[in-house]
Amino acid sequence: MTKPLLHVLSGNAVWPPPLWLMRQAGRYLPEYRAIRAQAGDFISLCTAPELAAEATLQPIRRYGFDAAILFSDILMVPWALGHGLRFAEGEGPVLPKLRTVADVDALNIDRMVREMAPIIETVRRVRVGMAREGFDRTTLIGFAGSPFTVACYMIEGGGSKDFAATRLMAYGEPLLFQRLMDVLVEATVIYVSAQIEAGAEVAMLFDSWAGVLSPSLFRAHVIAPTRRITAALKARFPDVPVIGFPRLAGPMLAEYATATGVDAVGMDTSVDPVRAAAEVPAHVALQGNLDPMALLAGGAAMADEVRNILRAVRGRPAIFNLGHGIVPQTKPEQVAELVELIRAT
Image (cartoon, rainbow, N blue to C red):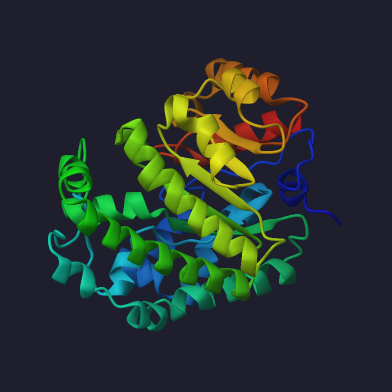
């Protein structure tokens, strides 16, 4: 049996399009909240293979999505490299602020490989669980944060409105910034390769803050490292597709899709799918891009948005998804409503 998501990522149009949602495992699900409480804290959950595998599979059992995505976080890479990470309640991720060559040189790839072992075990357990529970049409997606976005959190020490310190370093200390990017490219290739070897069938690269960059820096620090990672993964695993998500890329989306070598490009909420369908090469699948707030609203407002997206991507390789992750206030029945709407198309 051909898995619908893999069929699309091979360049084929499937109707209705396969469906999965970013943050489909999360706080909107009561079963997730139960295991989150059991784990005690978020990093402990990400590094507990039995619990993380359960979190990965929960939305597949409930909704029958066409993809399961590894339950983890993009910031587990700097954590594993030894940079430090904690999640403060109501504050989000907190990291040391990377500022010097010594800070970059302290990042330890060998340490990362050791620390990531529980996450790789989670991938193995998910594949076993998928086979045991009969999810024959479901594709397992592994993922990592793209180097630029991971660098943003490492330099700023957490989230930011505009990532000014990161942009300033890219302009004012380009050798230091490139040194960091090179480490993160290497780490990402190693990490994602291990996920694939453990059973991930697709790799996804999340560049959540790509849109804060000028076109020249976007080409240098979003497109170029993504191209390097994709090429390295393709050399090792030629049959494993890569999905790139350059959030808020705007008019750079088509260039990203063309220049990076990805098999699919994620559209964020701001992207006009009609324009994306016209400008992104026909062999590159489009993924997205329902506004999570439309999902939260549900009803006619959501249905109208869904129809607009489906109309725009019909006839070309496409994956239905959100333009960003599910918000915690979403009710499980609203997600069920969306799944029914897509499957009934």
